[in-house]
Length: 466
View 1: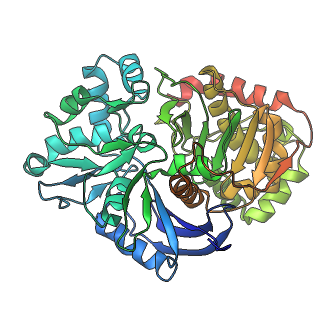
View 2 (view 1 turned 180 degrees about the vertical axis):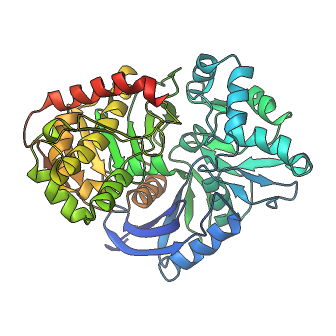
View 3 (view 1 turned 60 degrees about the vertical axis):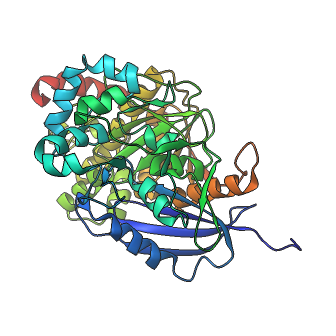
């Protein structure tokens, strides 16, 4: 090749926007990048994703040899016999199928039966519940539906110059509620239970498979879901667990065996490499800090300083951070609770500290849920907006019971999609090793009693929260 760099592109088609990175296939160095927004809402015309992709990638793809797409999971894209989109895609964050989730859980024999079958217990985010809602609420359109895709499936297929059979991957398929990570196969019986009949589904491609070519001749990798793309992007290894602190919290780690958690707390996903990716979500993460900062009339930087000025344990204040209800533990109707308030500890600094400790206490609950499924937690990789908080970095190791590293800020989902594209391009047995710079952080003090008190308050408050 005369020393010329092989280039690959990764696409992150998320809820809010499309991000595109172009990387050196060997080193992962980001050479070009673009971004374009998506319309807001919980349903969207998939053509908006294509328009955003074209805008974000404009002028970036010259010389690119392979492209991978990672997309928001669990959205439902319905196609007719001609392959045309029948209605706006219903996204993961649409809750209209909540009652369908309850009905499906009961009809199939309860949470354990679902966990054993597909590693999941139905909630409104999963595609299987959207199928049930669709079949009942819009039967005329449902009758015209020939195939159901997920967002990354649709965009990857749209990129293919030759048409052909739509594909997905095991990571994306594992979030539907009708594909079994343990068996590596669709559960058509669950499709029929939800939709009332069979419907065509995309073929599940192998992790390093080339599934087509673009009009410019670039190879297309299988692509994956955004969580699985993020795991590839940060170079997740066995024993690592990612804690992503965005609007909500997302906690996931690698496992060599599938998980089946009948409580529904741990979603038994597959990853994009052939392993498994058990995941726990919390509804309350960075927004807890934003809310308390607003309450105190301070900026987030000022909240950080206040929290660091207080002693561990916040003088006895404990915040249960269930400001939007909670999923881990499963308390959808709960509200936040501030316990232990006295005149002596009623200060802005203690409240700021309690906000940080409370948010991270909720994440520690998620880590314990993973440990209960025998997922090793040796090192936590802390990413997301709140990972840049100095107070969060100081408190997290003490509450998590594991070493904590903070990777440098980057578009890890898009990087993971690009790394998968480089893998498909290489034809090697494993994805290329791309370095990820990370800073190790240590606890200011070893304070296990802080989480112990958090757990005690949570247990005592359960009658008030349910």
